[in-house]
Length: 495
Image 1 (cartoon, rainbow, N blue to C red):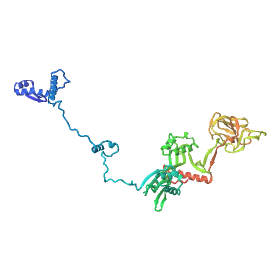
Image 2 (image 1 turned 45 degrees about the vertical axis):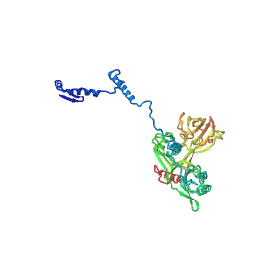
Image 3 (image 1 turned 30 degrees about the horizontal axis):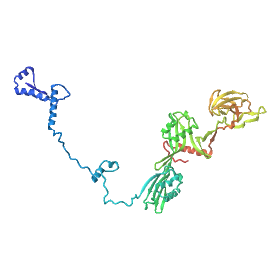
Image 4 (image 1 turned 135 degrees about the vertical axis):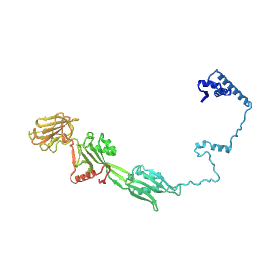
């Protein structure tokens, strides 16, 4: 019995195979032997493998035989095969071939073949012009308006007429540099003449647009007002780690933030502010109906949400703008703070002593003030002396550095001690009547390199205080600004 597999017929079982071979015909046995050999026979074996074997030599013989057969079938080396060669192009044919090559494309041709002019092509006697030319020019400065128009093709007469018309609305110098001019030039009858100006339009000011157009009577001016909404911009936020970065992140303009910090620093030390404090910035703003926005100057500087509360508003008095707080108090000015609230009752220089009775040098000034009134440090410094000092009674001496020093005599109380650092405006004692004194007052001295100088030769701090109608108008404007919602202005600014 035979079993068919991938390699033809195979006998199955041991004894069965022997029995089967005994009954297989001769023709079947020959086919089984020859068929596998034909399948494995290689007519052109690889000459790079099995070198020297019978298979290799058979491959060499096959190669030699094929080469010999090829040589026998060749027509012969002495009999060349001739082909047809076209004649070279000349004249118009050569020009047409060149026109269709790649060289004309490199010279700007849109196709490889250029058609020559025929009798149907007639040369133009004149180049046609566009009937209307529209262009845009930028103005370098207001005074250069006429020059810009002439460089853009406007005739001298039309440019002069435009200049006279524009000056009816505003001076040429008021036109901002960078202004765009929209020009429309019409048809001209002669090429030797400039094109006539048909229309000119530009934004003359933030709230005004001008148009110059040609009509039946020539050029005329049209003024187009632009509605402007003057509403201040209010921005608030927490100071955080940096006042500047926090304000900028909240949307405040850089210049407004710089002005806010400078204004605030005139009243409180900005570097020592708590991160929980809230800044309050109000900036002037003008919004055109066309969508453009212009930001103005700082209108309000506020600080809240912490131990320090500041409300500062600019106010003009005597032709000068000054910042005042919510109570109507202006900035203090001067090198030294006034050491005590009162009036100067005795000046610096030679005088008769009211107790000793003879003339001697008065090394300071006397400030008459009620007993117990506060005495302030005139400037930052370090306390050198704090105690009794003969005729001065209770006396304090402060060294301010750079050779300057101050002394405070006849005190009823001393609130500092020697070596303590004091700040300008800090209370260091109280007015009294100790020592050689005829009544409550402060004896105040100033030293330059150890020599007494007139204290009034150095300016004292002064503070302007609004009152009357000015104070009422100031408070009304402050209330008006504090009513502005955050992020926009709800009412028109009434400067």
